[in-house]
Image (cartoon, rainbow, N blue to C red; front, side, top):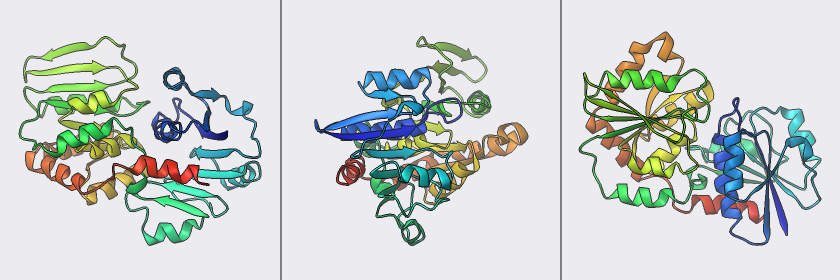
Length: 329
């Protein structure tokens, strides 16, 4: 029996992105009966329910005991170089999911960075880990998204009816409701869906009589594919969901929650895989700038251009590829 320990958090500080991508890899590893999966970290109620749903064992961080044969998959931004070196001395096989390339990870057995163009020479040469999985060829998506991508690949967006907004597991600055208000003033006769964990399973519906838009407040769900399936447009908070929407061939835009996400969003936007709405703080400091960006995005030609660019990216085998790379260590 091989043990794979995923170290990540899912709480008010981190949101759910780290857990989501780790979970997608874990489910692929779980396909082999010889593999035992354990999650370790600080988890909110939604996260623990999600892990239980998939029958995955989880522990709080201070209860983890590593054995000689364990593989650790670490996905945590809040560690420094000293932390990395201490962990390196505790585990036999050390894997890190990385986004920012700001630490020396040369002693690790495997580094995973699935961001666009991470396989470029600058990243590949500087990581210097024993093995690397770099670029969109290792993007860990949920397998339910394959069917959505296939459906959208044969269609052409001519009419937008359903616009979804999902800032993330934690929307500390109420960016979602601010975006909803801006969009409501730009479109007519649309269904506007705001996904937020603060709402219960019952959907609350509000009708805007002036522009004939319908507002739907939806709960956060373990099955995000259900929402991607319905979306003509998807606006994310700049994290994992912008990659998922692009994979699903959905016209998408991102309003980033921090500078790290902003850099990544700009890279995707430059290659036509998303539309950059700027930083979420501008919803307060400069809403007119965000409104103007939304106005540009709500153009059918712009939206179809994003969809067409997304068709030439991603691989159906990327989740399996990253799981196989970890399993082979």
